Length: 343
Image 1: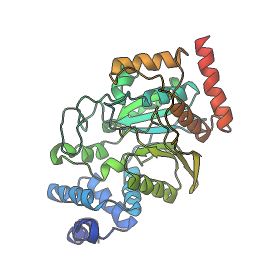
Image 2: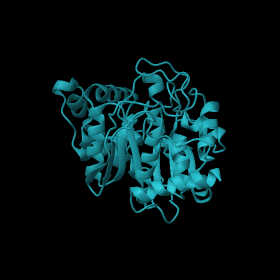
Image 3: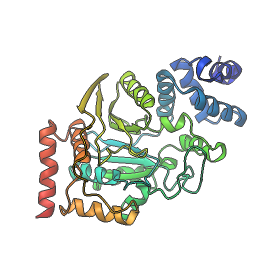
């Protein structure tokens, strides 16, 4: 029996609230999300599932099933040969502090690591014009906006993504281009007003045809543990951390724990920095795209130092991508690049 034929049973299981809901098996979740992606679910059922999972929360098996269905219906990006690409899902932006994810991406790209960032900027699922009960995106500076100002506009096709990764080692692409079916589900938020499972799935799927390093972050500890469990079960390679305003970049004032996952095993690359803040890091004056771009350009030119937490995250990703054999060598590469830029 397909999920479409058994929707009453599925809704009866997941729509009982946190205390009494029953988790779907990985196989059922995969088949259900596949039908959702293919547009086979009635609008009423889509809304019911969206809301039910919002209240229930997803198990690790459900998230893995959703992610596998997403990858099944993906036209994968062909990665350049050589280093393992790094993937950043960027769907929030920042309004309290500068969004320094573009700086992290450019530090990696400068070392020859292919970096793919995907987000809602430039697509129909963008919510920059909405004020929602669970999320106010107004006055946020997005990664796509900053990169466009730095000369990296959104790629218009899979071919353009591959070309940018080959030539410049960095590409930004909207979810509409990368995975139109997933973007169609994400855009439901404009009608329903709250987040749901798809907002986690976009952080979990691998858009490449081969292995990649997924850099994923969430704010809530329970979701962080669940995300780690999904990557372990999937045998994925990932760097997991507490998000900075929803973005997968270490907070420049206080580094979160940086947890690497590879081959089903976890490794803490860096523990959470809990020491008292004795010195305020040199950071942009405000979170505007203009000031953020100026700061990034000055860091890349060696005129300002790389914030320590971001340097640590970059070092982890250099090792996981294969660009450096260990953290010491990765840090040395980053420092040398800054010295060369300054000189």
